[in-house]
Length: 299
Image (cartoon, rainbow, N blue to C red; front, top):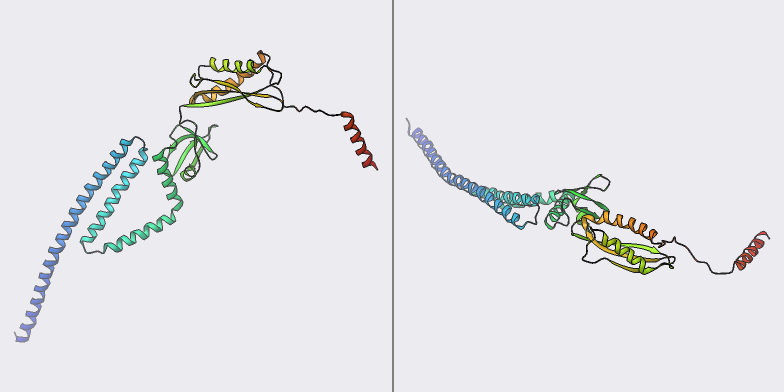
């Protein structure tokens, strides 16, 4: 073998040796990175589960947050931790995490703009489930959207109307308007207004209405029923009966007492007059004026 061949062989062996040494260094360094990444994944997975359980138990203790919101927040916390863990793992291999975070932010902004209406409903659904202006089984009226609540979801709320129809309303429409809840408070007031004639006995009418209220077991004794004159109208004196009932009894009680008031007034000779207008003036003057108008029209 010539000296030139020996030199080339030596260079090749030296190159292979350098490559092997570099490969060993690379394996050692990446082995440490892989081990660190596996360690971060395991720890991150455990931390995400622990935090999710902690958030779930913490929210359940409040007794004011809907189970749907509890599950949503626990899952959100868990996957947020996992996303952070994945970014840390990529950082172990020399990946520029700043660019990844920027890309995720841009993607999140684009998705948010594309799903603006959907995200608005989700945000409104979370607020409805957290603040609870209404619950399942309660009857509400929200700017014309009325019915009994059947289910509150993250996107929409399901209701049943009084005539048995199914209605689904987006959560954003229920959150952005005033909500009247007819079932939330345990007691409710009713004002029954009845017009009587000017010639009728006001005290007697008030006594009859109070007897009706006191005889009904559904009418509460505290606050005590009250009857008073609320208006002196054109053709009638308005007598009002004010009483309180349980919210569940309000509808039936108000209708039955209204019927009983008409029957009792008839039995006691108290009139409920029709609207009428009393005319005072000279009929002859009206006739003369009418005749003059007819003559002028004929000429």
